[in-house]
Picture 1 (cartoon, rainbow, N blue to C red):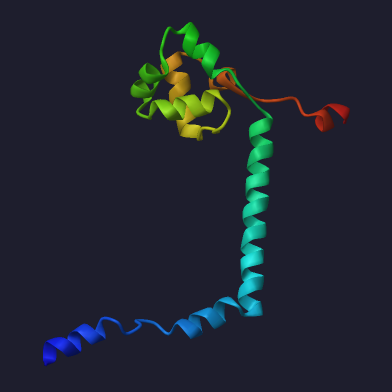
Picture 2: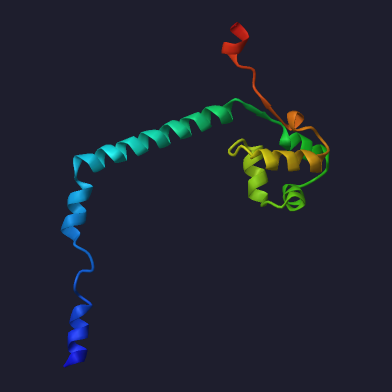
Length: 124
């Protein structure tokens, strides 16, 4: 009957679910979750603000060079979707990626990407 005992062992819980459930409901755990969520929200909000204040002329520069999104992507070693998301201002490229884009297109990084004028800075 040893094989029958092994089959019964499979149905035993591997963790103590009541202890895990109690930890998730503790006030300290809830406070930690709220704190982490707040940090993520602040980071995402800052990124959205930054994206909105960036001028991006990659689409115009790529078209002027006679390249498709696929051609440009292959030349710098990224996917076509990456080029598309940069052109549509969904994604802000890293410094290295911006430099590679500028190099392949024969432009300065400042020509492809620039900060939009800030009203608060202009008032000062």
